[in-house]
Image (cartoon, rainbow over all chains, first blue to last red; front, top):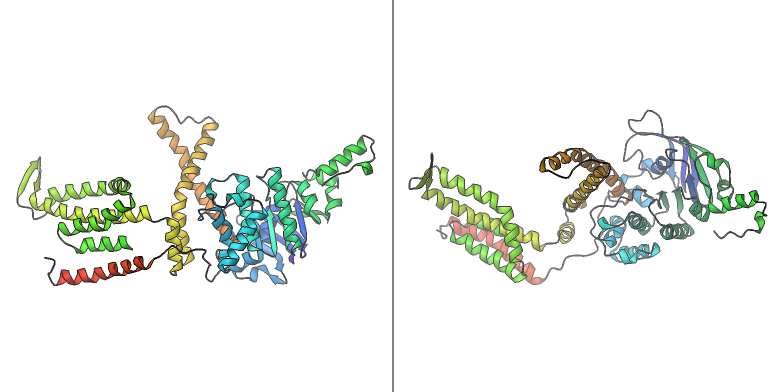
Length: 265
Length: 237
């Protein structure tokens, strides 16, 4: 259970706060989508939810962030990563590993897990996003999409109870995006709570139970994924509706009964 | 470790013959066996040549108590004592750089880092060692990307030498600032992967370490006090 209660955060040196009174609850096994235009506060919400802001970057935080009833701010700095995992769109790697295998094993190694467990998790995580064939490659020479999958595999290998993903498919092709979706669904089925900021609403429609929309740092819409993603107000917030919703609208406009459309999501 | 011992012993062994013999046994022979003698010579030359030349020039011409004059160039005089001292210093220099280059050529940085950590060096120190090795190519790559981006927007960096040099100026800022900016991102990435967690990290492998290697190491360590004693008792002279 990851809970944000009326959280406001201002970056160090910034005039105005980037998120204002954001409240979010992620129950076990729940996948919540975060949508909104650029600058709406998605990344900031992710940083706050993962405990990196203000811990790693200063700034002012008000309100509460708790995991399983414990305040994130009270956890010792090294412990947070074991509780909440985070991946960024930039897909920054550790920079000290010479193979993808080591890079994915890096997290579990830091957790001090037994060697066999580290290796088993690493192989499982590589398989989960179908990058087993990259295992021996140098992470410095990967494409943006491959790097993103490596980062995600590294997080999966840590098997966190909570996962915060900031545009995890930004550099990915449709196949890679699908793999990320499958991995997230599988992780949630195992009881993990997942917050995902994403522009690709098709992916959100496939994996999210709930969707939260941000505008100028505030939560403006919130609800079940299906009704939220079909909400016409979303477009005014700079969010493209998923293909299925657009198709239905086109059908209505053309006088075709949308009930007769079969949409495979 | 062998490199350190070779270097220390080279300084302990006085004269010319000692360090030469040591270089042959501890540097040239293993390098030849490993088939990397040509590379060793090439890298060693690049590393040691500037220092060697300055040692030679300074001692040859400016040795304080040099009396026997070999030849004169303008106001400076080359002395035999200076030459002898320069050669003595040079053979040591050769032994030391040879040992270090041999170490550099034969030890993958990954093995070094894992072994350091296995022996109880903190993960942060190990991180600094491997990050510093891996950062150089990353920065070069970044510089290339920025240069490409600048060229794509019309910055003229080709043509005459002067123009190329001038093209470097707008590169310095972005490369430096970008590298510094990346530090924060890297710190967050490491934090997100639990790197700052207290307690021991688990390690996946250990470099092979045979009994023979272990015995060789101890013998080498032992050789240092032996040489010190030998030197003090005047046996070496």
